[in-house]
Image (cartoon, rainbow, N blue to C red):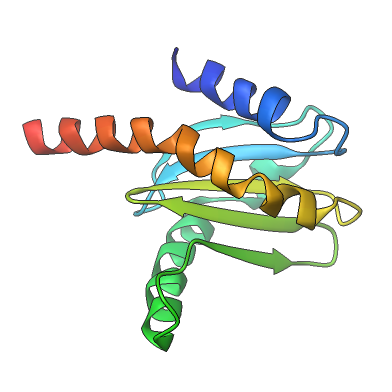
Length: 131
């Protein structure tokens, strides 16, 4: 399964496909985009760039210093969208959706998303070590 198929699988099988205007972006900790599944009605491609994605990595590292355990996700609320970042090792899954979306539903699928991403994260780690 390639990354595009993987992201489509996550969007259709793990997340609720009835959430309007939902896009998924998969990146590494430096903000390099590995793949994306952008909703056709979305302007996410124009808004989400690598600086936003890499900033999350820095923020989650800082949040983990609060002595409350490691940070697994961050939810950001904007005027016109909600961004949920979920981190698994060296891979970040960003879910960008409409402000009417059920964030609890997205966070409720977090464990399923993490288990889906573990294999991908491990294979990326192996590829990095082989370089």
